[in-house]
Length: 323
Image 1 (cartoon, rainbow, N blue to C red):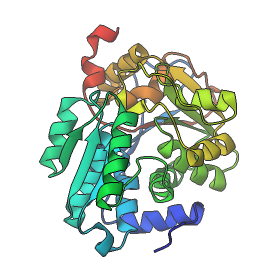
Image 2: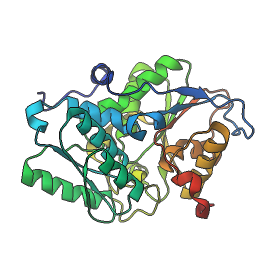
Image 3: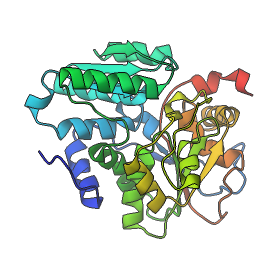
Image 4: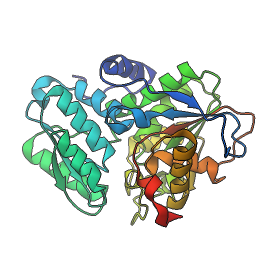
């Protein structure tokens, strides 16, 4: 096993070959015609990775990481901490490999996701208020038990797996000018931006974070990784207090800008996705559309846009109190 895998376009392509039997090539759909078009977004496409196995893009990274490990390393089980979606992806990957999975969750994780994890056969441990607290407990348990720990965003194999999204988009929509990608810890945008910019240096990559968890936005402004004192967003899958150096470095190199959207704007975007497209997206899954719908990001009207809808759910649709 390569203990320090190279993270480049070749790694993303290798991940795609490895993942082919285990994940879906998800749809890329035009948003037109619309009853309520988004101003300035006349050429908008949605990459629906909310239809990915386990309900989000996270299956790409978790499955690639697990498949990169020798069987004897994972036979006793794997451990991770999650805001929900990475945990579901690890539970799915462990189910495929027929090995145990233990998932640590912060108490801000929706109960429906904890229940779904148990349905996949994972052991669920609730620890702390947010992901960062759960992660510390997961790392301690992994060290004590000598079980592999699968990081949700700061792992080269996870990042390479997430980068396979960019390969699909560029094959299905070669004329794309701008990609909009939601940011939690930064694993998704790290992989997508690395692959996309390597293949198409002219592409514009826009990250979208919650105003209540501006993890990368704050770090880029400071020129270094910083830890937020607190997070206030209800989009818990976008809510780590701190990124890691590997993600920060890739984002600093390849991402053109990061915009911030509120929970209310994400809820409005989730309702728009449901009404216009019949797509049930959680708050974080609607973040990229929220950036356009709210005007936080104003694209060139001639540009072909692709917004990643990265996670399924109904919390955005039902979040009436956020309006």
